[in-house]
Image 1 (tube, rainbow, N blue to C red):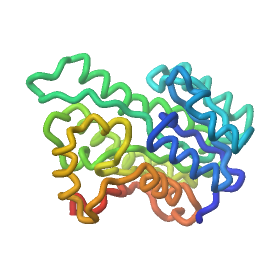
Image 2: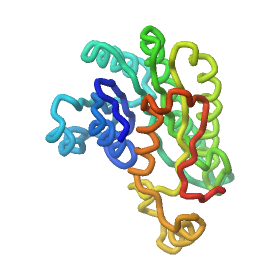
Image 3: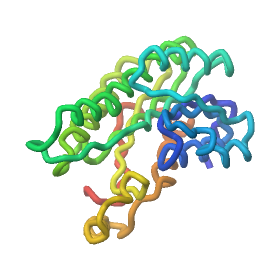
Image 4: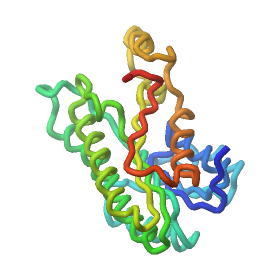
Length: 247
């Protein structure tokens, strides 16, 4: 298993699903993890992790679209731990509709959380990473951001933009010992996908080479690898974790 001993990580949107699985894996690897999530009952959602890992885990109720709160929360993590080594931009939302039926509010909501929220977090954390000449920035994209998907023009646009941002920033900060990479998950079983009709779910599974849905832990393992020293020569890449769905 890859180790993150004494590393300080911020993971957004980690009250459940992929984010929470990533928080658990990072804690197991020895990292000090701060969860940012706007879920109201955040302490309750993370109770099982806190009970096991104690002060190794902390959390803040943060909406990543609120710039000043993100900046203040970043400063608080540095005050508590002295440094920030890893940022996982996992927070995201869905507001699906075909393009002609899409409401403007749904377009802007998805772009604000899935793209602007990523920008806000990187902007706040990067100066601290630059100062210490070390950092790992990991962004959640999606195979939808590469190939598109019916009814998800807003989501696909945001996730494609995250890829472009990942590649561009990686070129700028590599000289400071900072790597910037993205994960593009395929069809992952989470609360966000539980509403999918069963017949459509089975069709999706048949399109996956390994013939199963992904698990949050599958994505968490990829994040762990890219956050570790083993991936120090990898930057500006997009790792598709999709079971061969898009080969």
